[in-house]
Length: 210
Image (cartoon, rainbow, N blue to C red; front, side, top):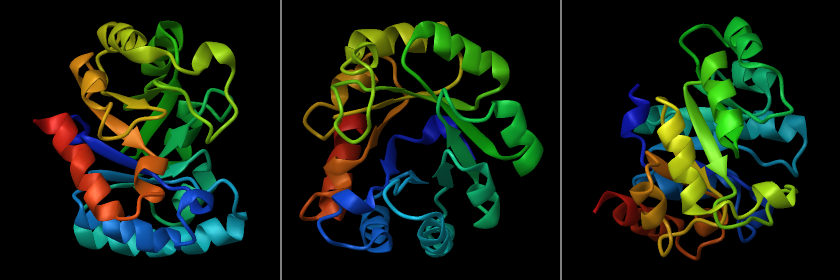
């Protein structure tokens, strides 16, 4: 797979899906043209995420879209995901490679140039940089919340791996993130909470590819 071709990246959130099941939202996002799906669903149990992951694996495989699992290397292996996305406090990239194989995609969250450079040096395939516009979907410190397009530009200039902006991104504000140097954008509530997730995904794609 060519990560440089990813433009729209969905991060799932069962608690922010307007009462819909995650597979329903993901199926709609796939219809809307999403390039990659990350199973997050932090508010659910490991067993629930496993069962959801199996269904997402079926949906994404059928669509030819990569499936990434947030944080959990063991869960990524259990559902045969294409890779894992690791935070700064998660296990190292090397452990993910050891457990998932050299062909697995390993992404790392980075909010500073220093973190980005360290992640690239450790072997990360891509970076998730943010929160660009601020977020209430997770607890982040003030220096990592609302880092802005300027920080995205600095991170993108500092590394050679693809960078995806995340945090408060929707179709209305996504373009400046890509213009700053990001390969694409990751969205959570902008898709999961949308009345029409397929249309929201299509709008986000149009915003970052025109």
